[in-house]
Length: 94
Image (cartoon, rainbow, N blue to C red):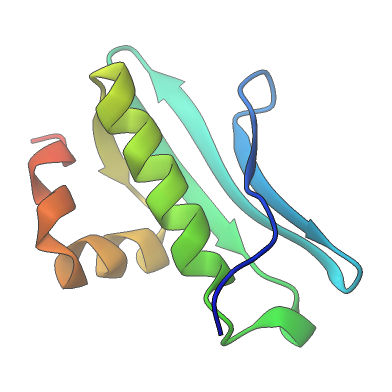
């Protein structure tokens, strides 16, 4: 099922969100100098399995690329996403 809800970014809160009637899916991050540490991805149970976590991961990783930042993937979901989508591997901080 394609994602039709927009992903919003709240830099002050360090999070990307997808707001839906069934709840809000969130990717949280912290700024670490020239990197962002992606710490957590959460999707309400009613929304699991519909691609919302992937959309959030992509939004966060694309943001890091646009801003010239490295990524510290502390969130297990995002670490696995990067392993499956090798085009983002160059963003991972050493």
